[in-house]
Amino acid sequence: MNSRVNSPMVFLQRHLSYEDHPSPKQRFSRWNSYELELKALISNILADKLIIFCPIPTTKAIISDFQSSVPDFCDQFELTANPLAGYCRVKTVRSQICNSDRRVLAGTKKGGVSQAIVLGHEGIGFIAQLSNTHTRNDLQVGDLVVLGPHFVEANDHCLKNGVPNLSCEMKHLGIHMNGVFADEMDFPEYTLNKITNSNEIIEKATNPSEYYDQMVFIEPLACVQRGYKLLQKQPYFNINAIETILILGTGPMGIIHAVHIQKKYPHIKVSITDIDSTRRNLAKNLPNLLADVVEIDALGDNIQFDMIVVATSSREANVHSAIKFIKHNGVILLFSGIDMKNGDVRPVINGIDIETVHRYEHSVQLINYALNLDAQITKSMYFMGTSGYVKDDFETSIQELHEDFMLGSELCLYRRIATSVINKLDGNVVHDLTGAFRDITFDMPAIIPLLKLFDENDANDSDVNVHNHLKILIRHENYL
Image (cartoon, rainbow, N blue to C red; front, side):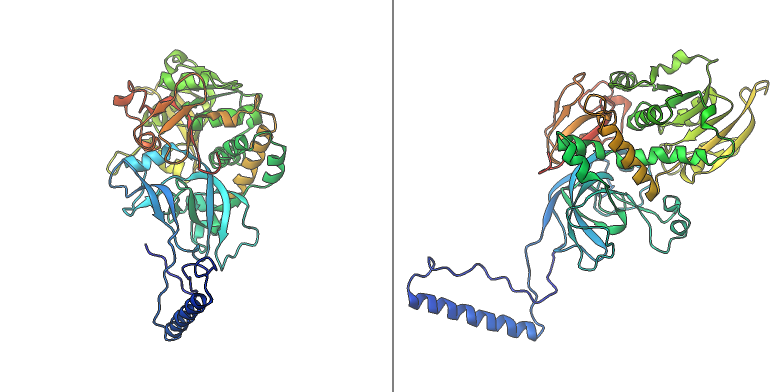
């Protein structure tokens, strides 16, 4: 899109210098030429006949029109000359790949758009420019902010009730609006959340780059924290009575759950499992993680847990494994949505739609569920859905990440969940940070093949098997 200046500003080619025209006659002639040019411009402006073009700002970006599961790299994605009303321009410092980014591209997470959009929704950056009509006085140029990927209109019913994450009209960065996989981008003021006390922490840090690597976890940790906050409000839930938790899924979000429980509820014994041995090995090799990493087949039929956290989009885990391993009157936290395409059968258990419970944060009790055909074995359980975050969750997430970061490089846990890094948005090498894998070089920006949803057919190709990584971190240009 071409950007045009609305105010009568004139850009001359460059200032006149003595070196250009050394003789007085030449200088006078040149000045006279400028005077005539200015008079003509002013005349046209007054006659409202002139449209003045200025250079169009561009940025590097990863984009998709969602007609293909493969995104594109654009080295000159056009921005407006200045942020539109209600928007701020942010220079991205760090971003991360979330599996929901892959699910959107693969069509297993509802998008409903067909226009070219910049992808990505987990990111932090510095405010570079405010719009001329900005309304939030708490935001200033130079502030370090985290992007909140959800956006709803000011008159939205769910927003007024404090749960904008449940709105049917919610828009999402990287799906309906341009996301964070860009070195610079304009975002609605509503989506910006200032990272409190960031300057003080950076001053104490021996390596500011490690601080940025840590704080890009604000949004995913905020989503994790919300689930436990919701549980604390339920009359049937007592965290002190929970002794054992099984986390289904050792992907990045499952690991974040395990770390959060380890830090906030140290009395609980945590087990974590995955059907993928590669993911289990990544969890086993994560320094300072106390969770017991187990094979699901080794659990047997008689081992049960006080609480199950479903941190995988697998239908099998949500509707079968969770029920199998939960104790009578135990609690199942439905954190991850299920991979579903239009037309797929709904995941229903005795009339309870598991996906609906997750999406709208319902709390449902299933009573005397028959575990076998003759109903000789039954048990009851509670389902608690959790979906996204609300603004207050960002503050508690920032606080927890700061506390973890100040433990020092050796003891800090969250930053280590990023097991791979790509330097620059168009970098073609994904660097291993664990020492247990290897670097991979692609013939394209590495982020593109790594945005492909896991395919069992790719399991034997370590270059494209995304399960060889937990979080994949992108360090953006100028903030390496």
